[in-house]
Length: 455
Image 1: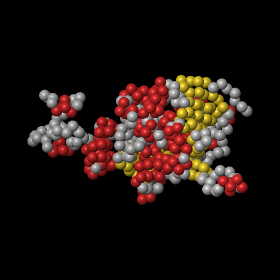
Image 2 (image 1 turned 60 degrees about the horizontal axis):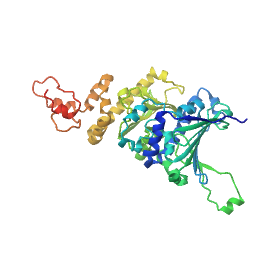
Image 3 (image 1 turned 180 degrees about the vertical axis):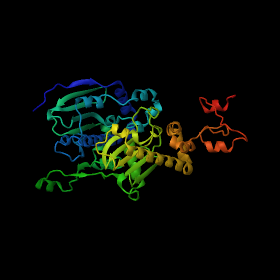
């Protein structure tokens, strides 16, 4: 059956249009990020299908072996990323590729300074990594079919990254999504097999999905003519659950690489904690302290939380029930052996296992901060500059850990000439005057105003 529909030409949303301008004009220095973002999106699509199939195995369509394929065509100057994940229908395509649905994006652009706009690390930090494809491509074509839908209900999306895109219904036999990038002249280096493999190993080595590329055929042209054979694929990433390995088997660089994948960050984390809890409750946690704050840190309603797995099966992103709100900057993974595979966000709200995991993870994070404040004061100052204002929410929200949090707080003081908040409550109390029973403080717009206040 052939689908005969007329292609529609649609306008991007205003925020998407601004983002595309930012991508193509300001973020050109880190072009290789496009592959990391598209591979991460493909991995997410597979995770979503795996989760949906827990309640409806028919969605696998007799193809449960989830993978990502990457191919290059030097003649056509294209690179293609294909997955057999959940796929998209027409509404999904319009929502995910024609608009930026994540809240706060408009405000982000309004606050974006010229200096920040040139920071290539911004891409991927606010849920729009797909658009990084336009750093390397003059045209991007997406063909997709959602799991469970008929073959003739596929969708083709096409754009040159300007202000418009076209959309049409097509026949699309394989389930999942195929993204074809028509590379511009400055990006033809990504047609080289060794270059693409290197990028995959750098950014995507530990995603839980095999990434397949064509196996090199080392035979001579004459041998190939005499004995032609079908192209062979091979897996080019490790595709294992790094957090499930013993700590002794994981290298420091592997921890950092995994953080960059799950945190969509280019910088190394400030610290991390990898722990396996056994006994009445069994779970593994890998928690990271980022080096800088995301743009929506102060939006308490924005998506945040840890990735939740159950027995290495992905369940959900941004499981906010696993940490208190004042630790919303923490990134990481929790893999539980004691939760059902069909656990939902509603069940998490009142689950005793989740409460125990939340308590354990909170203590791990506070321990990391205590160790950093004692042993790596420069790192802690960096942390405090980025996240101190959020940590101050802790004593009011977490009564059980109030005293521990209080010891981690830092303040500017008239006792020093430093604008950097570096005085602890303990230090203040030690130098209190005889018979002083109260702590005196002043609220001001900035350090200079407070220092020169007549009060």
